[in-house]
Length: 198
Image (cartoon, rainbow, N blue to C red; front, side, top):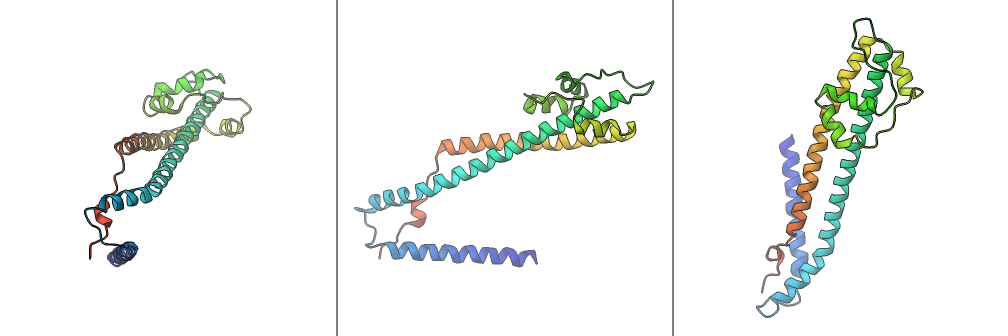
C-alpha cells in the first residue's frame, strides 16, 4: 500500500515537471541561440532569485522557531527539575542527602552534580533562568508528593531532558549547516529549464 502512495506521489511530481516544461517552452518567443542564451539565462536567474530567497528565508525562520522552542522546553525542564529537588529537600528522610532548601539560582547549579544531561542543558539554555519561588504552584504541588514519586518524576525529567538536549544540539548543528549552505550560494540550474531551440 505504501508503494502505491509513493508511486502516485512520483507520478504527480512527474506530471508537474511535464507541465513546467510545457509552460517554459510556451514562454519562449524565439529559439535560444548563442547570441541570446546569456540574456535568457540572466532573465531566468533573476526571475527565480526572488522565489529562492523567499524559500530560504522561510526555511531559516522554521529552523529558528524550532531552535527557540527546544531551548524554551529545556529551560522549563530545568525549572521543574530544580523544583523536584527542592521538594525532595523539604521531604527528606533521616538517611537522605542533606540538600539546602534555598530558593535561589544555586538550585540550578546543584543540578550539575547529576552530570549528564543537566550540565550540558545548563550550559546551552541555562542563562537567565527564573529564580525559584517557594510560592510557585509547581513547587507547592510537588511538595505534597511522596519521596518515591518525586524520585520517579526526577528520573523521567532527566530522560526527557536528555532527549530534548539531543534535539537541541542537532537543531543547532542544522542551523549552522544551513548557514554554511546559504553562504555557498544557491545556483539555479538554468540548463535544466532552458528553452529548447526549434
